[in-house]
Length: 595
Image (cartoon, rainbow, N blue to C red):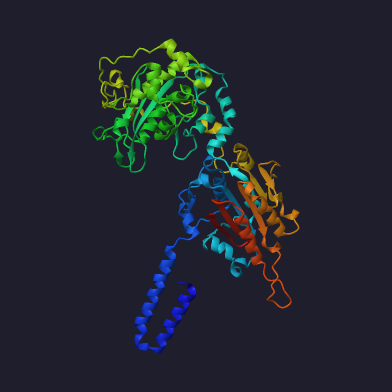
């Protein structure tokens, strides 16, 4: 039923109520029921907009402002981090207060700043923003009113710790190599590689360094191989439950079970080798492990492992000298996929580990140590196709390496101080950890000892400013050949004018005869850019002339502004991130949605 017919029907019903008071209640209920049924019928037919919202590939934005704290309003820095993430995505750290699915499908980002009069929020009601954003808006912090601060925040991207360290990697490496380069140092990951592979770094929240002060590497810097087993808990997917550390002579210097925070929900026994019976009565904590590691490792220790970043994250510790056998050994043509420890051990050592009997952290640490020693012995070219090494030639020349046999079982010696066990009772059949002697002291006695220190603090040498360090947006644009930015505002407010290049284009409002011609020019070229930053001064918009007023007087220019905003949004592509900021000295508001 058309709206006009429905309206006439309801009017007739109401007229009947006055003519027949005795039937008022029943007829009124019928009219209400008819209207409800008609509304349901109309709403059951999805509109184009509703159909579009159901598109599974459409980016979906959800703001979780409560994560910022009660009463917190988005300031320039927080808002710009959102804008930068919408443009560059996973290359930057995602703001924790937003949820944005299918980010790769965000094709453009349009930011419109509108400078308005003091009474704008009281006297003006713009139909297009209200309809497009469904009357949803967020009040911003007062610093948004500062045009210079606002645009400088957007044009300078805040760097992640990893990015800062990449840029300082050359300086870092020089500090490690003051005494010269030695054989083992050739195989240690550079600081930039640690950052690139997501190793935990000093200064990150919750991360503890393996030493307070380190020594420079030398030819005699010792190797220590570490491997961790993890279980799933109600607080984390990967919680440390066993750690083994092996020295160069394949001796166990630390092997202990660890009681994680929270309740274990899955022991993942097939991969971890951990069972519920093994964990009964375990009291050793992550903090105990950290203190023991700090006391056991010398200040120039080189940590060895496979995908070592996962073990260090489980330990919540950082270490500057890491040799990852998954990085230095690569027998495939892929530079992005690391070969598994099991395959590397079978290929280069002729030993089968991680069998159907389960995993053992000692055995994995032992395998990583043997692989690291083989790599150092054979040289930088060995075992890595990236350096021209060929597996086919190696296999033809070397054949199968003789397998090391597991012979007599050696019983672990109790702790010399407290008589507690010093190693884990492994459940893997015929595991290699059963034939080596354990450490003389248990973890609880080791953690009480003294820690040998070096002569430099790794975090101090990084010289990373974790809060305010930024880089011009053009440095990120250079990395991505597909992205470019249009700056449609007076760039004189910027501390550093953007370079003239294809990556950044400027359109100054002052160079156009009117605001309308400026907007028309911007709208005509918007599809060429990934991000468009536009500033509009409402006071400079020419008001429309009304024919209803005597003498054809100009009305308020709100309607002209309304048309300008609608034109800019219409000129963007589908799946664009649209942001509008209305600002004066007293109040600032943000409208945001995905088109």
